[in-house]
Amino acid sequence: MRRAALLLTGQAFSLLGSSVVQFAIWWWIVLQTRTGSAMLLATLFGVLPQSLVSIFGGPMADRYNRKALIILPDLIIAGVTVLLSISFALDWASLSLIFVVLLIRSAGGGIQQPAVQSFIPDVVPGGKLLRVNAIFGVIDSANRIAAPALAAVLVNLVPLWAILLVDVTTAVIGVGFVAMIRVPRAVVQNTVSRDSAVSDREAEAQGSDAAVSADSTAANPLVVLRRTFVDLKIGLTYAMRHPYLKGVILGDALTCLVAVAPMNLTLLLMTREFEGIDLNLGFVNLTTASDKLAANELGMSVGMLLGGALMSVIGPKLLRRSVAQMYAVAFGIAMVGITVIGLGVARNLLLYLIIDVLNGVASAVCVGPMRTVMQTESDESMVGRVFGLDTMLSTLGMPLGMLIFAPLADVIPIAWVFVAGGLLAVPVAVYVLMLSRKDVPVDD
Image 1 (cartoon, helix red, strand yellow):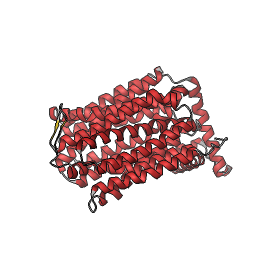
Image 2 (image 1 turned 135 degrees about the vertical axis):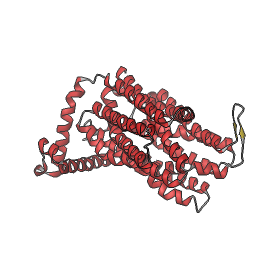
Image 3 (image 1 turned 180 degrees about the vertical axis):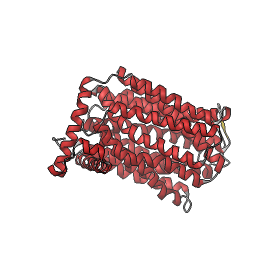
Image 4 (image 1 turned 120 degrees about the vertical axis):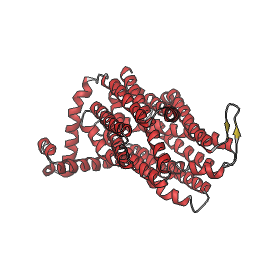
């Protein structure tokens, strides 16, 4: 658990700094351009690279040192952030440079995220995985609360070039904590055996003529690319043969496509449906659009924090078996769909914020069990690819959903968009529940 504490602490610092800087950069783009096209490009550069690079990140987490794959992206991201900070300080910054930095930061996440999720089972006792994943969810939720507030304070006090250095500082601190983790000797030895297992699977999938030596692989980029897509194919085949892995991966991706995508339209929903409606909560009076948008973000984050804390307490007791964790995933997805519908039909601002909190709780109920199923049900040599596949599909789901729902919001009432997205999430929950009742292949 000491190793888990070091990993979680390091990731907490890394997440906080990255989120603060991400908010600051996006706000700068909005204030400077005031155009939706610039924000669309910022979103694409900030999301799609992670999805595409995770194709490579998953297999890399299976083949190479996972601890190094956690540390190196943080250091590279810190380096390019320093360069962007200098460009702002010298008045050389431009939108093109910012988009390049966003691309590199997102690509780093595509390597780091599968490595972190694959590294957790290496350093955490099997019986503690659900609790650690739930704590990870709590850290993520707390970051969602703290990062926007901290970014807002810093934007009003210091120039952007100084805010960018916050990410550099937290990245160095995070790397320091992860560097202190002593990986168990058995895990170090398994790093070599993982690559052997992967090679055996490749030979089985392609035939003996497809075997490629390590030297030629390192020397030929085309061979590296070919092997990566072979890894992806093997990972996809492996996951789709296992009903639990298939359920959580497709359930995650489809939920992001149909339910998470409309959640990105809350800006329009709040502006159109609650314009001119004030809410006095006693300790705060929500009157302006920014007040309501901040309350919306805070409600979701508080809900995720509460849900993560709940799962960390009761999850290890009630959800010990994978089938119970699958039931929790199905229930969580159904609740996400129902609360998204509630957000669309709510006409009272207080009721909307209560449903917003419940939506966060439902999201947290999904995340912890999803990660635990992928960690415990995957073969040790395949866990990186499984997480890489999940990252790729779920990250692609949100922008693809936006391409569908965003244009609809301009031609039909936006509330209908939320109702449609929520209704479509319910069959996804049923699908996951059906897969949870299938037998797990004994050879997996």
